[in-house]
Image 1 (cartoon, helix red, strand yellow):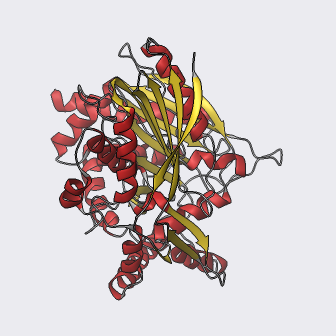
Image 2: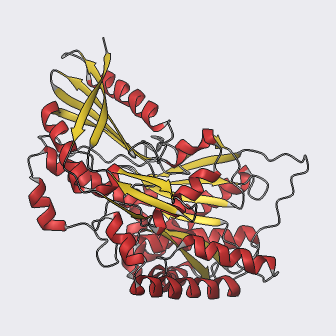
Length: 472
């Protein structure tokens, strides 16, 4: 038998303050607010994991309290400026975090505990956040015999990006295992959102923003204005966007092999494969991809538990040529693009809107790639070590389907999403313990289901064929 209760975890003596919102906070809130209310929970960043044999409830609650003191983003609210000129962040020095608890009998089996935890996670992840009135974090615990056997963390995307969630899980794991918060502060000293906003409004920050936006505008002017034919649904109504997930155990190994052979990162291999298939299906030799960049390589942001991810525009020439050469070119192009991925998205969008009104041709930014494979470390560690990784619930990807357990590649269609204006496709790379996954959401008027299948299987074939050639 399972019972439910709520624990109010008091928080006091935290850092406080108020100031401008960061570029990341504003950009994400704009995206969420543009979505239909029923669609907004898709943008939550969530993870859940079983704990075996379990962690004492008192230790987890104490760790959550320390976590709030370590990271201001967890007790920050976002409100309009009083004069309506923008967005402001307010860091609360005290308050309460509601912890959602499901209590199970001491002899409850692992499968039932996982089912209870999964249901609780789905419940918490399925609710939107009101960033003006509530803190951007929800926690769910499944408890049996005084031990937490399953934990769920759900955060507003305005508080963390995928990398930030991974850093949060790392800190929570260490705190639960007895590492003191002072030791974590001494080792990492993460930049807080108010500190980041102060940099962004400084002379150095404004100069960096202007340079990055100028770089991206040059790219936007040089790249092709459209890759796929315009969306003109015959019925006058817009179809829902299907989501396809390819699960490939073989691809997990092959990506590493190809990257090592060409002395690149594994993301370059996947971006090159996505660019090649984009070019093929568009009937072109080049491709333009908007790639999500975590920006943690910037000074002071390495350990930031906040939202600092940005977009890099990649225009890849001869994308459908020799694949090995394309991987190397993608790696080189990515370095320059990532350097200019930290900027004020609102200002860039305003400049794009002005140029569009002046009928200046600008690049197609509707093909989006997001590599989420390494965003989360292994799950919260129990006394006997970490559990297996749990892929994040991203804005465009569902919980990772199992699939591929017998070594074969599988492709499933888990869900359809409401239409997203201005999107051709969003492609996420995910990882399970035994496979690499490619999750694609696309406009069916531009990429119908057969084209989506061809795209995903084509990416796999490109990488596997390159791996075979390297071994020959």
